[in-house]
Image (cartoon, rainbow, N blue to C red; front, side, top):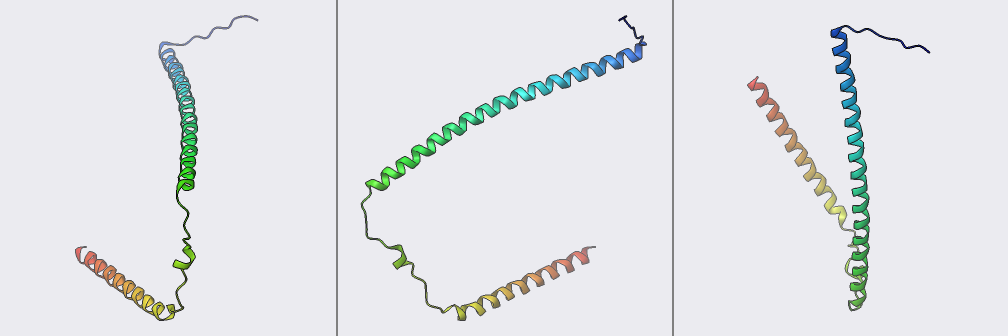
Length: 120
C-alpha cells in the first residue's frame, strides 16, 4: 500500500489542529473524571464498611445494656388502654373548626387578591 498525502492550507491546518487538541483535552478530562470516580467509589466502600462495623458495635452495646438492666413487670398495654367511644361528640367540633379555618383562609385569599387588584 502506498502513502497518501493531504494538503491543508494554513487556516484549515490551524482549525484541524485546534479540533484535535480539543479532542485530546476532552479525552484527558474524561479519563481524569473516571479516575476520580473510581477513587470516590473506593472511599465510599471503605466508609460503608466502617459504618457497618460501627452500627454492629452499637447494636451489640445496646444488647449488653438491655441484658444488664433489671427486669420489670411493666405492661405498656395496661397504661395505653383504648379510651371509651366518646369520639362522636368531638368529631363534629373538629370539622366545625376545620370549616372555620378554611373559611378564614378563603377570606384571607380573597383579601390578598383584592389588594393585588388594587395595586395593578
